[in-house]
Image (cartoon, rainbow, N blue to C red; front, top):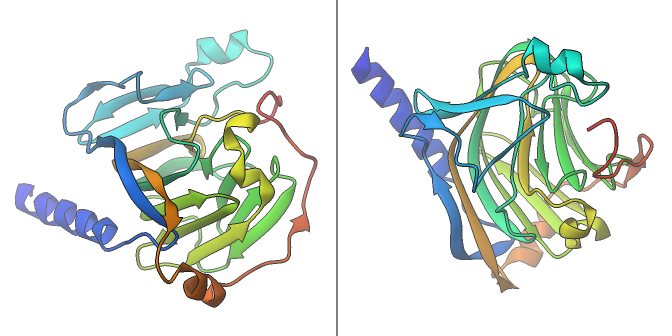
Length: 247
């Protein structure tokens, strides 16, 4: 069994390692963790949100909903879904990570991956994925291929430079969008890379690396950008801010 787990772990790492930046050039590593040492979260790197419970277990950063006692005390932000963010993420960045969601249920909001609080959010559904910008008021990209599958590891490489954002998935699609709000994430609440799991479910992160980026874009980015699918922004809801009641 240990041999099988080792092989699966190696395969997981190789999938993520295959992804290379398309838009930005990495500068300095800001944070890197494979969560090999069990224990509480590193609070210098991570901020649990809405009272949800996070710890390093079995080689992953694992999150669970808040306790019933916490929920009973709250009028909003109950922590029904495990949520966490990495405020050490630079405003303009490259982020490589693996994420998995298990148990619980999909809602109209979760599960999602987020890049700057209410700046750029990728929501997964059983029917596909949608990228939301401007406080989730605009849909700026979508994929019918990238679906929410409980128990599946998603290996991703996300890049934000200027007003452009691109995210690749191993053995999956690449989504691209351009929006003026991407260029000023710190002014809209910051908090960098973040995830929210399914309601009453579990979220797991692994093999996270965050880089700052150089001023120059990748050579050949303009040609690559022209080849990526693009979506005319569609209004999908009321704009939310970092202080909104619904996250």
